Length: 229
Image (tube, rainbow, N blue to C red; front, top):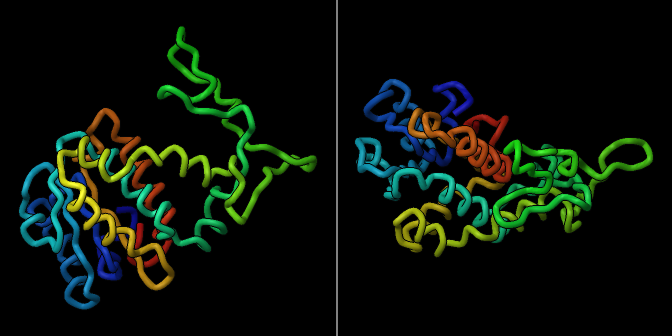
């Protein structure tokens, strides 16, 4: 949630993960309820516990603690594979069309440039392919196999509904039900926001969880719009 509390009233879908705002932030959560009352917004609660937020949510998905990235990965794959991304937004406002260097790769859980001795990465191979003018090459059709979009699609292809269900401890059907709702905002006339709190940020991989959420929101075109964030 990167917009103002009050802006949540402009959302069509409110995904709550890593938070229990009905109990912990009731004065803020009222804006999600207002969005539902006046816009018909859907509130989706994804949590290891059945919280007070889950009680009033339209949909609830119970997951294992620590499986948030797998669920978000499944949502990213669902949006990409089913053509649910906000394509114009993705082309014009993200780096999805940029073409990555040919020597970039990912194998056995590691990206190219990994140094085992230091435990760090030489990230030079992660750069974009550049033209004679020094600017990154792009493909706005998003068809180039080394475009950021296609590399992302390949990377997240592993997060099938079956894999998400196995990791998160939910059913495939329950995951797909919330995936359809969340990804319904990938168009110009709908917008969604994500409410998260220390249930994400206090994980050792908290930054990676929020990074995954940001990727999802960019694909759906929900950042920088009223009711988004």
